[in-house]
Image 1 (cartoon, helix red, strand yellow):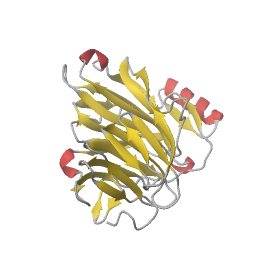
Image 2 (cartoon, rainbow, N blue to C red):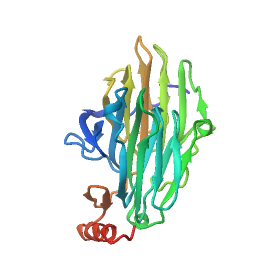
Image 3 (cartoon, rainbow, N blue to C red):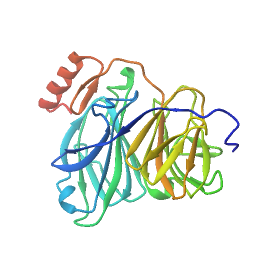
Image 4 (cartoon, rainbow, N blue to C red):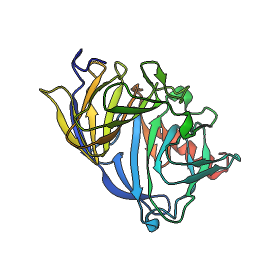
Length: 286
């Protein structure tokens, strides 16, 4: 791929994650869904969890409800067992991804299946369009060997969770916002023009090393723990590593441009729908 064929998307905002806790006290870094970046349509939240201290994650995420959006869990290290009130169960292992569409309502848990060692990964919340908010819940549990990998340029390695690079297409399918989700590794001094769909909102989050994002005249250095919001002009975004290896996730989705009403684990379009969601959950209709 010719990295200089078209102008790269530019970085329009940078955000550093904020420490927080969720579930039964799991320590997290919240990147989207905080004061500096409340949401990036259609993305509602991005958390990174990374700790080798068992006390930070052992309590896990006991049973809790969701309605009106999707959760995407991508594991880099560690093991997490999920289960729900409809009898589904699965195991997230290093390199696996789960795309759960909560739809009209689900009650599930996510609990560590380890007592020591590193637990590391991401959870992304993706909004559903109004027409799909009351759809039937479903899971796409995708094991590591089902995620294709490609080397589209020298010193570049990409795991394609969703979207397409050349002839390589990710296994996540049937998602309304037509997502892109790439896990990109760059060797020192490697460069890659990553393809993104026209009009999609997009961000890059560097989780190891540092990357220059954008053309030479506008590039911004993004370091470990920083998220770069990209503009919507053009398609490709130019990623360049410095003297050290770099790893990042590059995520994009079609904006919904719909009103958003949020209350904890419920994301709808109006406050009336939020009240109905709470009532349905309390009445056992999930």
